[in-house]
Structures are given as C-alpha cells and as structure tokens.
Image (cartoon, rainbow, N blue to C red; front, side):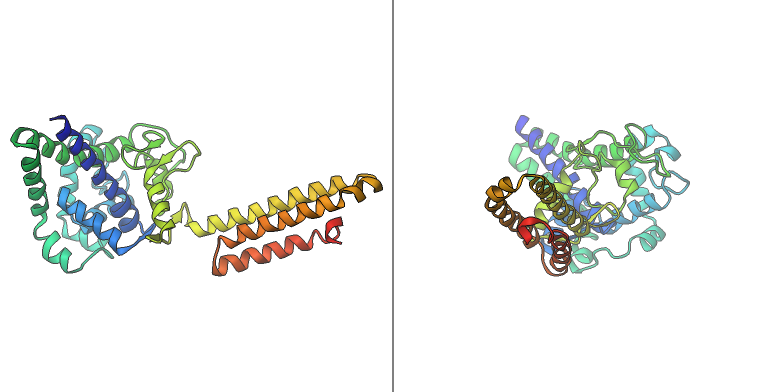
Length: 327
C-alpha cells in the first residue's frame, strides 16, 4: 500500500510539473519555446493522467488573467469564495472549459495536430482508464484503487484548489498588482514554482517565477537545464528575453573587472619609482590574466551578443591606455 501511495504522489507531482512547465509557461504565456519532443512528452503525460486538453487549459487560464478577480474570471476566490474554489475549483474549470466562446477567443496558437484531433480530445478518458488499469495490475485491487484516487485528486487539490484558491487569498506579496494574487510560500518545490503566484501575476510572460534571492522555482531550474542542452530556447525573464539579462550581467562583469584593474593601477602609480620598477613585471602578468578573464567571459556568447560584448571590451580597454601596463 505504501509503495502504491508513494508512486501516486510522484505521479501527481509530475502532472503538476508538466502543467507548470508545458501548459502554463510554454503554451499559455509563450515564456519559453520547448523542443517538440519535450512538449509532446509532457502533453502525452497530461493526457494520460488528467485527460485535459491543452487548448482548454490554456483558454481558461488566459481568461483568468484577462479578467482576474473580476466578474467573468473562471475561478476567482474573490468572486466565488475561497471554499468554493478550494474544494470545487476543478468543476469551475471544467464548466468554463466547455464554453465554446472561451476556447475560440483565448485558445489560439495551441496544438491542433492529428494526435490532438484524433486521440487526445475525442479519447480524453482513454488515458485515465489506462492509468487505472496500470494501477490495478501493478498494485492489486485495493492498493491500486487508492493509488488511482490519489493521482486523480492530486491535480484537483493542488492546481484547481490551492493555486487558484490560496494563491489569491493567503501568503505574501512582492508586488502591488491589480488583483489579489499572493505568493503562498517562497519555496516553489511542491507545486513546481506555482507557489509564487503574485510574482507570476506581476510578470505573466516570465518563465522564471522567483524574483527574490530566497525564492525557489524548480520549474525554472528545469528550463535552464533544458536550455543548456538545446531542448528549450527563447526564455523570457520578467519583462524581456533571458538573453538580454545574461548580456547585461556580462557587461556588468566586464565593467567590474576594469574597475578592479583601475583600482590596482591607481595604487601602483602611488608607489615610489623604485617600487614601480620592482612591481612592473608582476603587474604586467596580472594584466595578462585579467585580459584572459575578459576573453573567457565573452567566449560564452555567440553571434550578436559576442559582437556587443567585444565592443564593450574595446571601449573599456581604451580607457586604460594611460595606465602603466598599457604603455
């Protein structure tokens, strides 16, 4: 029994994880472009464990953002009450997902391929039945039934209840948004970063939900890992592409290196002539190491980013020509 429940909890966590990374960040908000293989693996898992349509989920969520905490918001605790959303949030979602006008207006740019039209939408309950059959076969009738119930309730409780309910009622706020969104806790692990709901409402298109150093977003960690191996691209952070943030940090790093070098040279020029002669070789070696550090920083980037950073490098080095090692 214990192994069945543990398996169900891990399965449920993966379901919320796929909802957060694929449906929420990639499909609904276009905060990242996932590799087609990654997208379909997650889409298949969500069909298997929830029977949910990507288009329906995206449409309901986009409408939530468009009318947040106002009349027309599909699942706002401000409109319907916390207890209703906390315990019946899934049914509010299902009700809105059947509205053709919502799907038409808010469900654009969602998967519409052969497998979506012929399998995932018309046979939406087949995946859930396969999960039930698997649980019963592997764990037996009693434990399998318990595992299946846990799996089915996991999304209902955490996604439709906790995120949509407590995420607009309980917690702290980093930003004064037009809605009642709140960060439930700063540790976005159990619900894959969705705990940072106020941050998300402040920057809806951001693939990164954390905004403070102490906040954790495991969904963002996963996306960074995917990007590192070429399985994700075009990540947005807060209000602009992540690459812009990286280039800005690189520019700041170059300027910091130059500032430190200038400080060293200023101290050197204050030394006596004898000290200067004695330390000249030492400082020239240090300058060579300094140049290598700058080049290593620049070499991490490609194309336009590298050209931009090389221009910054040349401009900064030009400012140092009057210093002793540059003569």
